[in-house]
Length: 539
Image 1 (tube, helix red, strand yellow):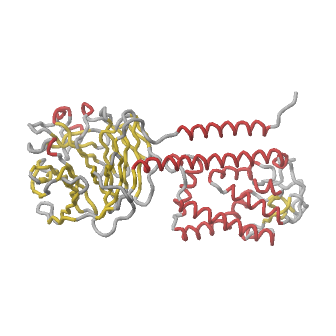
Image 2 (image 1 turned 180 degrees about the vertical axis):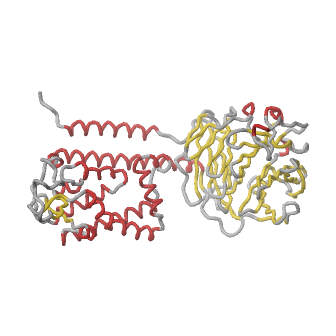
Image 3 (image 1 turned 60 degrees about the horizontal axis):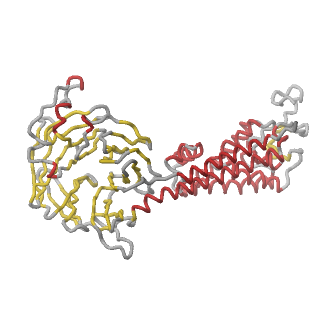
């Protein structure tokens, strides 16, 4: 019976993987079906954007100097989300509670009766919330000077809302809100320098605020802020300064008030924010929300049923430009499709290399070479050390030029190469590509010139090894060129695994050596003989 070559099976299997990857790329989506609700939340260094549909929602994360990531799906409609440092807390419409950490959803402990908080604020691993007092009797009373096992039942009052906390393990009640604070007064929380401050609308253009005294377990130092004709407000800190962003009665306007000095008697400064312009021809719409993002503000605005994301600053010109949210949601998918295309191209290259290796150079992997009597194959560690001596200086030089931390950069390349990093970043950042690509290209030119002229690089010279044709002669130029051009492929993170050919092949040849018909050799010690040379492999 005719036996098919091994490369037929390898190529067929790779083509199946190629087809499956193409199907997966075509079926991927990062937008929910049905009517979509857009919401935002932010911190000093992170902006979160959610697109919530009836049955599925997506959450997108963006750093100050980054684009939005691919988006993480969750089954259900998001009712409320709260920034928690680098993480995000999410309450779904059915009351289930989740935490998004490192791109993965983690189930958190639901509030009693799966209550959805009216407001949240995060500070030092604690999520502070405003909950309906109807569930107060199901919460323990938090006590700062006692362990959780010693907490007693929560003491309820006639208040309609309570302040509660979630410490990552359990929920507990802290204190009822003042009787004048109701759902209709739109209460907001701010944790400022360790103090919990409650703001609420008192009607007639007035905002009231009161600080919670943890030691006394009571509200005190109520103050008033005049905010005429507002239809909603947010409170947060920018640069450790408490800020109130009030949505004006006119839908396309909002006002910002900075609370300077002592919060008990603050000096209130009204600031007219400067906002990024809308695209040409797009009229102003209705501002839906304002959240902190870095040293700026992120503004969500609805214009003719289209959501726009704008940026504003309290001083100077805002950084960035206004964006259409639908394009923001589609952009990660476009990047993901491009990433899939890049991966398919790399897979096709890998198929081509393996096929060519099996067809053209199959025997070279296991056949011994006949070298001059004074030469033998170089040790693997010699080759590795010589490569590092030659390559690392280029890595460090271009890391400085491109302002990339080489340790962190290599870690990201490794994550991306093995596939885990592609879940968060389908494509490598431009800075990493420029850094690594420049170092690899410069090293390739250097190695080609040095080996063509002398047969060795600086690293090989220091390790007393050199490049030879597998016939034992000095390599000609095309051989040097081929072995170094193939290294361009080998140094792509997804192809780093090909380096193991140096260990697996009979003559410690990497892929470039196999195609170029070259081998790296060292001089045999004069006193050694072929029979007793411990390094010589058995034929």
